[in-house]
Each structure stands twice: as C-alpha cells, then as structure tokens.
Length: 128
Image (cartoon, rainbow, N blue to C red; front, side):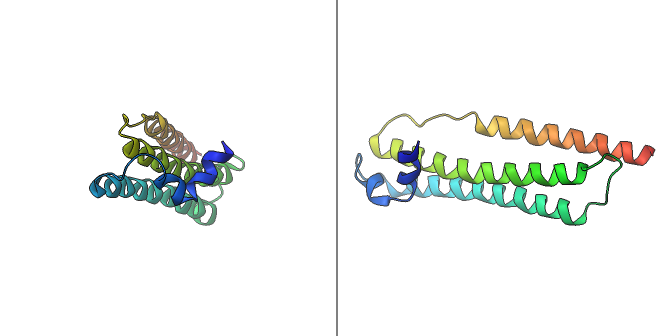
C-alpha cells in the first residue's frame, strides 16, 4: 500500500512501465481525475457550509454529523481519485484492460442515502 502511495508522487516510476500511450488517452484520464477532484472539493465545501450555515436542528448534533460526513466523503473521493488515475494510467501504458471500480456506485448510494436522511431531518424539523 505504501509503495502505491509513493508511486502517486513519482512520475518516473509511472513512465518506467510499458510504453508511451497516445497522449489523448492520458489526457482523458486526467480529465476524469479532475472531475473526481471537483466532486471531492464540492463535498468538502458542502461540509463547511453545513457546519457554518445550517441552523441548530431538533436532533442533537445533526448539523455537525452532516458536516463531518460530507468532509470525510470529500476527502475519500479526492484520495480515491488520485489512486484511480494512477491505476488507469499504468494500465494504459501496459496495454492492459482498464481496472474496474465499484466506487462510483458506492458514492452514488451514499449521496442518495444522505439526501434521503436530510429530507427526513427537514420534514421532522417542519413538523416540530
């Protein structure tokens, strides 16, 4: 695992495997990485906004739980983005099948569940 993390910061290691791919594939991989990074930043911004601007809710510490969940999810997305980018780039250079990931489906389910929980919290607040 530590070797994999070290490889994120060592472009020489990445270039030492396989052959140089068509640059369009590397640029497409980079655009995907940047999209995931924007998603992570949006989740972090949402967490900070929740911590600062949501009113105190009827459920104790719900605001803080929402903020922390969004911050942690944003951090996880950012870390996952760089790992995914490196794995894809390596596969492209080696001419291998691209690795698959369940992370987008898991992220979508977490965001959907979080939205549902927020709807319940808003309705509970409206009833009280």
